[in-house]
Image (cartoon, rainbow, N blue to C red; front, side, top):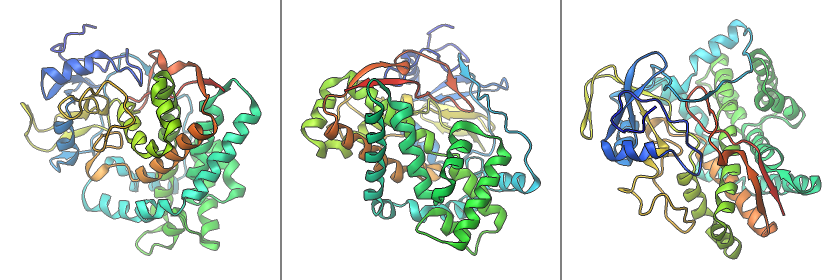
Length: 398
């Protein structure tokens, strides 16, 4: 595969790492607003790597998420967990609440049903609980002893416990929730588990998302189950990735970690910069043009699929000075790691709080933390169904 930015059409490059993207993204960005991209079904569309044009596409109602095409990749990691059979109710639930393939009033109605407990104000009321989870998991990692796999011993346990806390998974079902949604289980097992959790919240409501869903008069049971499934399968792996990758980025640029050790009050700013610097998604879920649309210097014809790349847009020198450098004092607001527009990540405020709590705890309690090795420092296969990086094994000592 040539590195020429004008090669048409290209596949997403396989030589990227989370902290060091392929140079092809910069080549595409400098060549024009949109670069030709090949999709798995043979369709020829575009990838957007400039920040301004990326935001415009994500917010433009002339692009729909309803038609899914996955970009072709030079390397791919296939999920080996077979979904298995799913009963009629489960199939209806999934089909009726697929927020990532839905636009317009129906999408807005369902999205509003899940956002009350995920707002800035609501999430901040749980900060102390989240910090307790982080401290508890870190205690477990320290008890395990060094060296430790930070992904398995810190990032993943924090993300799943906070996820369950926010959703309202009752404590007695957390082990099964972890098996189903972290370790991987057939789809029917996942739906059976969620039905138990939702029924528990019907009987014992709390300050959580599941309790709000079951009490919402505008949702039927199928929609409640479907939204619970969407929320249970979304966000948790992203948070685990960001925690692990943030630590890798900070420890490979030791001065940045030391800056946070010296001044933990920089952590909220640092979190935005770390999100900008190490997005999980090479491309977000694709959009398809509903009519001819001019995107920068490129006309996108009706029916053409376009993929926005946070990896490219987050390092656009038109938006940030010296974008390839990590700077924990930089104002990185406006990054696209959570997307933008009507499909912007609903759980982004929860993610910010748990990532910040984890980073603050590490720089406070483990100022001598050091990186032994990280799989993600070397190019690896990209995960399905859209192109994402994997956390991989991150080995640390202290």
